[in-house]
Length: 219
Image (tube, rainbow, N blue to C red; front, top):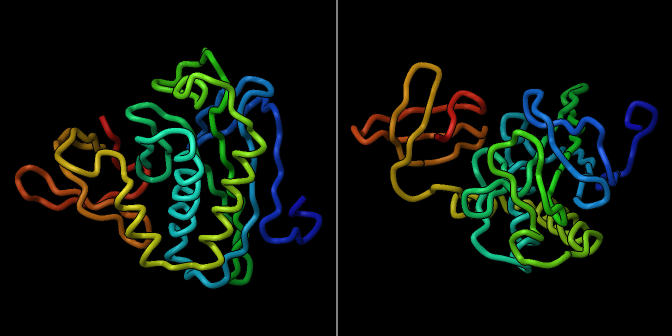
């Protein structure tokens, strides 16, 4: 649709089923027909510098957490933008950018497990909202809440608040945990997330290490 016309900002497309749901770096996203939330929103962030577009990922993460807090607690954001309940993945975010004349079009894809009871893929740790709260959840109401939260944070664009709140809700934000890079396994704690999305860790020996997406993994 974007190739054919200029869609209004905040335009949303939703589907009840994906035959080949797409995740990061070619991963698949499993979603049973008619059970979950699968939708994309269009934004044109002209007020954000290109090297600070990770702010959109932080906005979306905060918006989803706020909406989910009406149903359950212990919702965290696993860097960069997986939504976790305890140690299980509840939602994923995939942001795709198109640049033209220093302007960017962003399509924010969100997959959120809502009413699915059983997961059959080889994903390591999926969970649905229904599995957490023990009842069916109104998908339309939940999606409306998420979209409203995204647009509210996006229009206010309080960058200091967004970055601070994101840091406060990060998965494994306190203490040392095992990580894996291309060259080693090590224990470290989260120090900061920089404006470009870079994750800064500190090892038990006091060494600082910086990583971008897919350069380090939680173990």
